[in-house]
Image 1 (cartoon, rainbow, N blue to C red):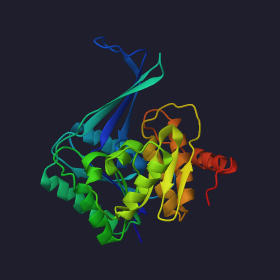
Image 2: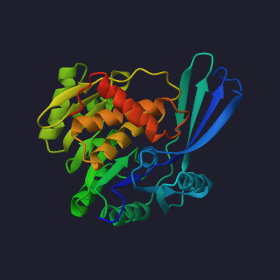
Image 3: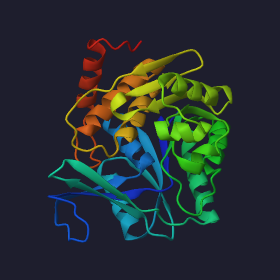
Image 4: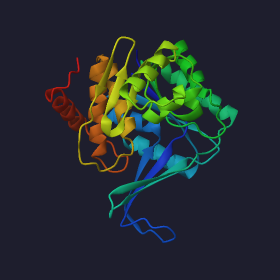
Length: 316
């Protein structure tokens, strides 16, 4: 296998703009400062974070207009192997405001440009070329306007044809239309509820819902991200809850993508499922301590992982 072990797909990337404001008040001009710009969108973030963890990765993503060019430049600047697919529309922006008076974070997300069927096919073609030499494909993020809800099932079928293992992190109709071919599904609690169409309040309900997706053949394993409550791993043979690590949070943006990156990198290094989830939590913890969607350092993630194991978490 000559290419990178991990390839990511982002159909709806974004230029992430983050800034501070004293207070967010309606109808007033909100004076912002300390702005920063990061390449964003689920798969782009996963690629950036996997690269920060020392793993070779290719990032396939759409790029259009001046915003798309800026995202491409930012990805290149971080040393990630970018595979941009040019589109006619303008790559979207996402805007996050950190309100200093309350320590709250406000996130404004645009829908993104509509993609034509021809642009969608070029994305699949680019993914196929990259996936033939990859061990894992991570498809992450929302589907933009114009893309049918069964698109990620087409990605799953492509991965089966190329023998790449698909890790999927998405929401809405794009998630509900997936019927099989996923190696690992990483829904949030809300997304898990949408998948099964019922409440999943208790841990038993969450485990039952995740196991239902496995039994239906949708996925081989499920990791449910639970925010401050950590994560739940469910495989055909086991289920285990993993607590989060309490830290002072700088920015929550991209923490879920960091978890996916950590899990995928660990699996690419032949870790067990439990070890991979522990490493994913360590990566998410490191991400919470960086501004905007800035990447972290591998040293910080490895330190969190060791602390997590030493604190009594069994990751074998």
